[in-house]
Image (cartoon, rainbow, N blue to C red; front, side, top):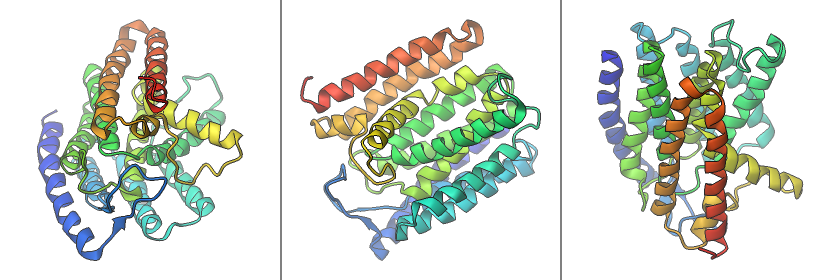
Length: 329
């Protein structure tokens, strides 16, 4: 526990400082996100905050593992995250083709799954081991990508990361899984350090080099939680992101649109298009996430029942955003 708190205390200011340094470099090199018809911002803004956030998270994970304060296999996860950082920065700069990018995401996710306990069953034994791992792989790859897709307005991914990671930390405390606390608190600290610069109006954006690796690290912690018998809690914590991205991309797929192309059709983006400020939308998501954290925690004694309430909560949030987008509220 002490090591986890020290990690938090060091990572937060280190991230804030690193983002400031990277922001100066991005401005100097004119690495900017230029607004277009698919953007939710109106001014050219530096893009690449992940160059600061991701290395600090990966270094903290590696150090915690090396010191024996986290599972040694988290080194493998950090290595996979490093590969995704390099790949995603190249994608930020050069728009890599979707197919090879997705294949490399899958390779990183296979490494992440290999870092889980060998007897962990993500779906609680409902499927044989090989099928369990296959479903987990598909879900992991999807989570990594949806985390990137959802990073579309100021502050949203910083808030989501902090909330999910804080929820994971609380559950680690309940189950006395000290070896996980440092990993999750690292992500909470990095998210807060980044939000200092990314809160509306954002001074820079995270970019794929941040959103993809963060989704990868969080996804691994969620799979680890599920593998330790807490699948329902692992579904509840990121449920808003899961629902918004899956429903939106599903609709685009049904219409025959290219789901990997940038767009402004997510529910939270509809609310912004309807006139809701970025910060108000994200604060609404923050409020919902706080309730999701409570519901995830209550699965310890209430079983699957909190999932029903979580689904109703997220459905109400999506409906609210859709109504705002249509000018109905």
